[in-house]
Length: 62
Image (cartoon, rainbow, N blue to C red; front, side):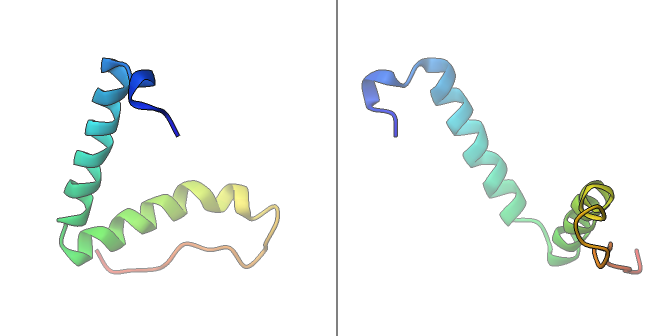
């Protein structure tokens, strides 16, 4: 963990932006959160298929 002396203005800005993004994602309605998970699955499944043939993307009605 960085000490306060090690945190530059740029790192502080990145931490702030990360926290703000987390707040925005947490405030999303549940259906939009599920859609975000499905999008992540679409990106990950091609890679995961090499390790686990059961990897799949949820089928949801949009």
